[in-house]
Structures are given as C-alpha cells and as structure tokens.
Image: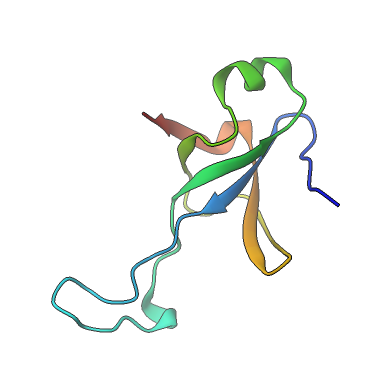
Length: 89
C-alpha cells in the first residue's frame, strides 16, 4: 500500500532535528522544536500544484500545520498547498 494525498495536499517527511547542540549538550524531546522543513514524498492530483512542487523537493512549511501520521515506522505530515511557505533550491 502507498499513501497518495488528494487534491491540493502534499505528503512530507519532516527533517530530523539534531539530538545535541554544537557544544555537545543533549536536547530532551520536550525542549525540541518541531521541524519546519521537509522532503516531499507525494503530491496530490491538483495540476497547478504538480507544476510547482515535485517529489523530492525540499520545502518550508508553517509551524502549526498539517496532520501527522506514521506509516511503516516512518513519520509523515500531510499539509495543504496554502501551508507551504517556500521551496528550497
């Protein structure tokens, strides 16, 4: 089975955050900020969106956006087109 977002939705794999700071201090899970960037895994069937965003693109998205899900032990985020802030080149 494969996850395919619908309409103007995008399936994103959030970037992982560092477990330690540059000086070696370990950051506990409760103090970590959620990542706001990720890699596009799948794009919905909206033709305008498919022209802008492709599988493998890195994007920035809003802080409190999308729906989290876990599939085969991997965490994903499903976000709408309006929540994408930028595409990284």
